Image (cartoon, rainbow, N blue to C red):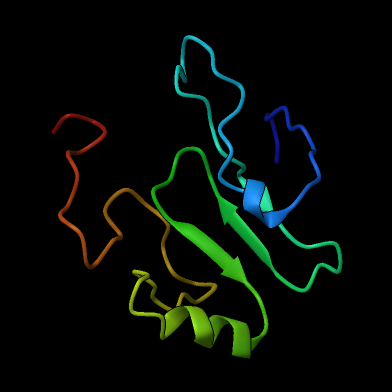
Length: 99
């Protein structure tokens, strides 16, 4: 992660949504941007500047997430754009440039 200070924690998956690092910019803290099990069988990634979370995992694991009705999940491809306006389901947010 270029130009980003990172801290590495370890613990139970139950701690993955723990908020930490509260400061003036993020008064509520932040949750982990990257997390994975000890065997590296999968990885979950959420960039601080994006609204989307990505899962890299086996086809079976991805299919389990995609078919879970409790989750809003879509398949992604390596060539898919990751921009403020690339969400095809949720309402388009205001333009970051204010236009």
